[in-house]
Each structure stands twice: as C-alpha cells, then as structure tokens.
Image (cartoon, rainbow, N blue to C red; front, side, top):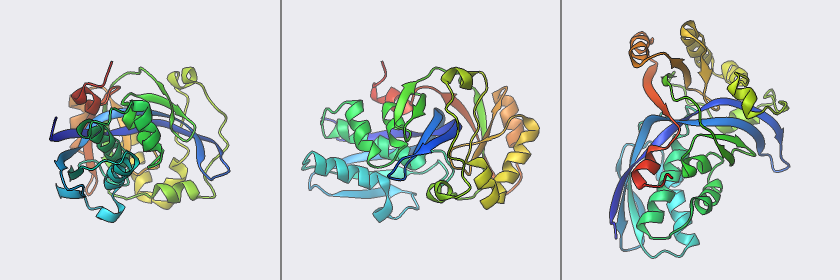
Length: 282
C-alpha cells in the first residue's frame, strides 16, 4: 500500500459564465464552461497512523481552521470511519481569490489522494457528490475533464474544445466569490444557451460588470489586455485571460505586463494532470 503521494492540483478557467436563475436555498443556477490550465498547486500526502489530520510543510496563507483541504480530509475520514490520518503539505502557486479554482482543485486533489491512500475504492461520481458538499466547483476537478456545466456547477457534460495557449493576468486583487454572487446588480436571468451556440462564440461572464465596479483594478487589467485581443475574466475574478497565437507571443506580451500585476503563460488542457498521474482517465 502506498504511504505517500505528491500530486498536482490544476487551475481552471471559466470560458463563459451565465446565471439563469436562483434556487430557493440561495444557490445560483449556472451555465459555464470549465477548462484546465497547466498552472498547478502541489500537494503532498503522507499517512499518519495516529488518525490525526494536519498540515505539514507548505506556503498556504489560509488558516488551518479555514482550509478546505483539511475539511475535505476530515469529511472523508468521518464519513467512512477511517482510523488512519494524514499529513498534508500544500505548495500554493494558483492565485487565491482569482477565480481560478485553486481551493476547489486542492480539495478535489485531497479527495482523490485519500481515496487511493486509504483504499476506499470510491468512484469518481461518489467522490464528486462528497466534493459538492465542500463547494460547487469541486466536482469538475474530481471528474478531471473539461466540461459544460449546469445546475450550480455540478451537472457536468464532458466537452472537447481547442487547447490554446493562454496568458493569465493576476491584478493582485482578492475577489470574494460570495460578495460578487450576493450583489444586487448581478444579472441572474440569462436566457439559457446551447453548447453549439457557445462553440460559435456566444457567451459572456455576467460577473464581470460587478467586479469591474467593485474592483477597478480588474477592469484596468481587462482593458489593458484587450489591446491584444478578446480579454475575459475567469469565474468571479479577479484573474483575467486572453487566448494567444503562440507560446512566443504569450511570453512577449507577458514581458510588457505593468507592475504590480503578475502574469502566467499557461497551456489549456481538457484532461486534468492529476488524473493523468493517478491513471484515472479512460
């Protein structure tokens, strides 16, 4: 039995984001497209015999009491009465509060890793259901495929789309997803669109006007990036991105990014590197 694992937890981009309604419990009904990029957090897992769950080495600024990764491990341990514990090291590379799904990806990575280390033999669907208890974006990271998503983000249909090079800009602004989705001015009545319409170029991000108003630096980053093409915001922000023609072009534009913004050149992928490493893809 494996005693330890070191695994990548990839970032995602929302290639569009519409809100079509709101449930009675307050959750928003979405249409979105998730695609992974090769910007990863890295997590290390090592079994602990005494049953404790704790963070070990790493650079995560999130307090342990609020860490979704530890919450994922505790949920799985209690749900299946696991006697073993785990030490988890987290190397954060994905910007926090940037709309790239770093926390959700880390939680999904934890569920998949512990399913292997604790020999729980749960299916991806079972793990995705557990992940949904932690956050609406966790299931897509559990399944590990680019997807057209409905519901609150958990009704997933795998989608094969081009895998370009993206330039991602982090304007170094932490945007609260909860605050954006609670905004009165947020559009919540988009007409549903089809995958075919998306593939023809339909779809926007309805969170962008709200984020622009509340975080002008994000708007400035979008406007700056727009001189090179169609700039978009991922999720509830604040990272923005643009499709580039080549790796070389992306590096040239990255070299021009104003301070204090950070830039990442990232290749899109329809298959999670986490699942590739664990041998979970068909």
